[in-house]
Amino acid sequence: MTIATNRADRVLFYNICWQQFENLLKDLGEHRAARVAYDNGTMEIITFLPEHEYYKETISDSVKDIAEELDLNYESLGSTTWRRESRMAGVEAGNCFYFQNVDAIRGRLDLDLTQDPPPDLALEIDLTSKSLNRFPIYARLGVPELWCYDLGELKIYHLQDGEYVEAQKSLVFPNLAIRQLPKLIEKNRAVGRLAIRRAVREWVREKV
Image (tube, rainbow, N blue to C red; front, side, top):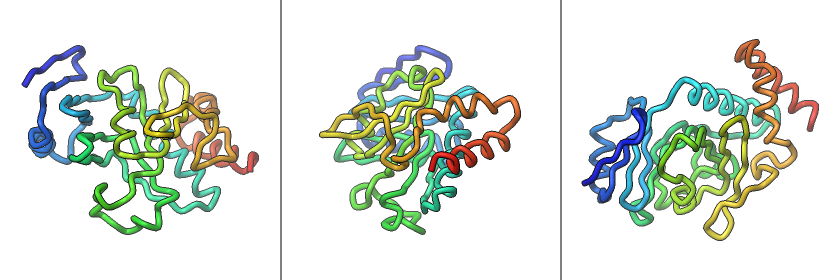
């Protein structure tokens, strides 16, 4: 097993078999600040600065507020560790949501990607801080839509033929210009979280 460190908040492990990955997850425990990703033998453990957590929480709140304004049922499963041994893939998103497949998993706490659908939407924050490319991992897990916030931009990607293609509209919220969310957040950031949530809800009511 080889270990390489590039920054204090990030560690890469190479030549990790699946059982070692599972054992490391157990050793790290469920209640931890670090998040992990695994791609065909390479594992990354990363911790984040407050800026990352702020945008993760704020954009996640925005997803929930939009869904409630549109009267859309959903489930939010946070940074669940999604993994499939047959695909040699595992990842913990900033947050993940079920919309289209919410009826299939509602009330369930024992989800298994070998028999259950993956989240319909996953949120990634600050991709530039990560060494391990998350896109192939999400693709092998079959997540149909990714939102990636980085450097003030929110980009949308759809899974097509096993690869992610950048898109202008969200599959979950096709009638909203979701890429405008960062500007809305920045406009109200100094006022506080409650003001942002109110602004997002008002924005949805105006646009729909």
